[in-house]
Amino acid sequence: MSESPLVVSRSVLLRTGAGLGGLAGLGLLGACSAEESSGPGASSTSGAPSSGTSGSASGSGSASPSASTSTSASPTEDATEDATADAVPRRVRVRVASTLVTGLNVPWGLAFLPDGSALVSSRDTGRVHRVGPSGRRRTIGEVPSVSNVASAGEAGLLGLALHPDFPRRPWLYAYRSTATENQVVRMRFTPRGAGGGTLGRPQVLLDGIAKSVHHNGGALAFGPSGHLFVATGDAEVPSSAQDTGSLNGKVLRLEADGSVPAGNPWGNPVWSRGHRNVEGLAFDGSDLWASELGEKTADELNRIVRRGNYGWPDVEGSDGRGGYRDPLVQWATDDASPAGIAVAHGRAWLATLQGQCLYAVTLRGPRKGRVERFLTGRYGRLRSVAAAPDGSLWLGTSNTDGRTTPSAADDRLLRLAVR
Image (cartoon, rainbow, N blue to C red; front, side, top):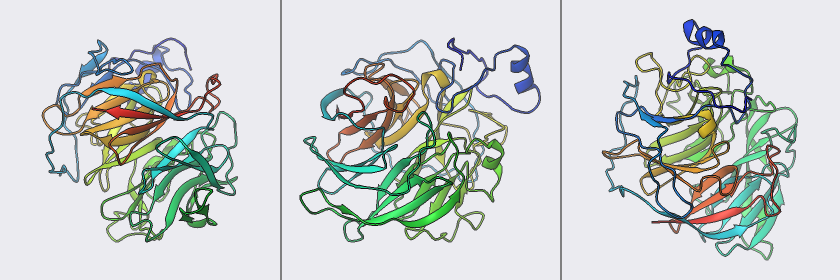
């Protein structure tokens, strides 16, 4: 990856025809990193103004000169937005209320228990920790057969989700990389005992998801209907993202037992296609939002719909009326590389790796698509973010992932107060 910013005036890179050829002719396309590439700026394709902001660690955002706005039509087979019109505060303030835990290994997935504590996955070790609101940490178990093929790779123990009827149905779901593939598994979790609880043996619900050093996806989220949504990466085979017979480069929808629900568009687990690498999923009511890591041009915040095609590998970012689903907001890849995502206070919150900041994107109302930025550069690479039951956000760093030099306290889990 080039150290100097790549400035591209178009918001979309078409990989067929003049789009790619024109940029290549200018010598602007360099090697890309799986979770990082280059280029400044953010833009909204919602039709609403988008103001990028560069906020202090504890204050509300201020305007950023790199932000831009564009308006485009978004072709859709399901144009219905969630009709809930809860009041969205015009601005929010964010402060670091506490550092909950230090010395973690690449905290990736976060799943909250009814008592306000959270289960946290460590990507490279395969361990699951239970962290309380006071910061008490206990290791409850290790998910077997987890394999991370390279120290700077992206495989391992990734997303976590609890069954929506927990503890009556005491299942913890996990996305894990084995030596040969990615899988969705579930384990019985008993939250009692001095050690913070016990974790049972994994049951494989879905296998056959191709694995690579990079682009493994890994996010899990239960929707309001009780279905489990799973994000996969293209495993560095871009053509798989458009193949509806492949599980890669997709958002999948499963029943809680791993079976295929009625209503899936292709009669298999595939719900949407055309994704490069989705590492974050979160619901706002019935709307599912996903963070998408781009290659050289655009990172994206997308609303996921049934049968939606998000364009990869033909398109990065918005293509206007070109036939693919457009993102609500897109960023130049040097400014983002979004990983985890949470929804709270009428906003999608995106933790960014290359951008080393926390973005907040308004999801509803007249300021839909407006962007605020917080904690810029203060804690290094940011990967996981989740909305806690008490209204706070928990935020995990990613400085032990082999891409930077960690501090003695890394990785850490922070509690953010939002008001």
